[in-house]
Image (cartoon, rainbow, N blue to C red; front, side):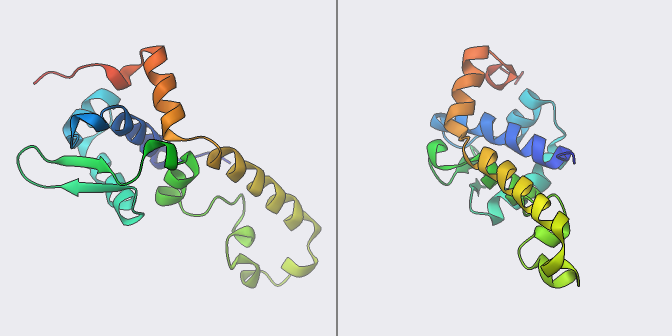
Length: 149
């Protein structure tokens, strides 16, 4: 199983937003520049993040995106679920997925996939934007570089 670019890029964008949150609304173009992610792709990610109640878009001059909650209250799991859907290794362990498989109630391998999915979710839910933004600043990563203009 691999996390898609949607999940990886959404986490990077949200870390960037958390780092720059105190500056007011953060322009999508600035996040796009710092993260080297297409602005159009970023727009699609932010639609999902907004629908999940993680960010709010502000239109007009000086507009951009703002976090809807404190970085300490947003987990990587929240972000991944917003853009990727449920954290599940196979479809039969997604919420309601047991109805899609006639063997779900007597499948020994489903138990493995369920436990593994829960373990991954636990790890992602246990890491906050606050932690990641602090680590990024300590490392001097691209999250804090300035873009032209």
